Length: 117
Length: 113
Image 1: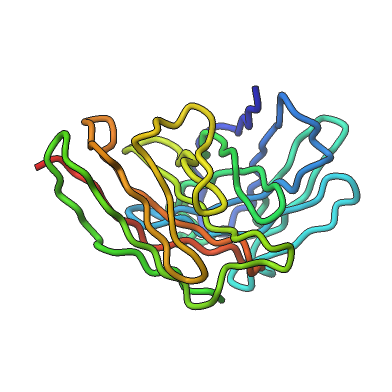
Image 2 (image 1 turned 180 degrees about the vertical axis):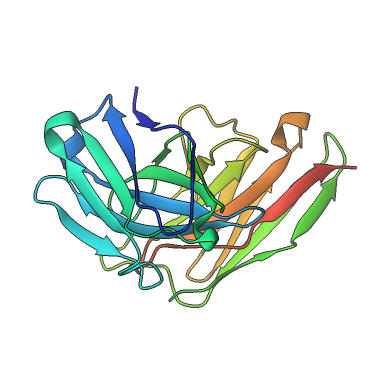
């Protein structure tokens, strides 16, 4: 059974850095793009970007390019999403997801990030 | 970016009655491999979205056959033949033919009358 297990909810202050994680189970991790989707309170999902674990080739939505960094450690089947300096507007639920070609098939349980002074 | 437009934004339905949700894309979703990359997801309050339909009309494992997808090119429909209480929530369509970025529609909220 495919599972994507994410790290827990966090509360941070503006300007702080953060790295959240997503570990894949039940499939060949290197064979699928794995990425991140943001959902702000009361809004629809937004694709942020994804990474190919085999060679760490990453692609970003223009809306998120330069704002976040997606990385991977294929030795432990884990993808990461990180910020160097959080803003209040980064408050949202972040989902990791698996991406077969042209598709999104499995979602993680979500990581709630709250940025507040 | 490909814009995905869903209608209606809200859909009150009576239990046991059918429901029809629309999704339109600003460009054709037929990819160079001949497949059409349009998916439907269902999100219940407080839960992660779950995929129901991929490539327009293919149902995911475990999805009741009350759910069916149809359409082509830029115009797509998700039909629920007989709405059950468990079907409430928000339904999103998503295109994967033109990326980056993958884009989602604004959602249709299904509620019981």
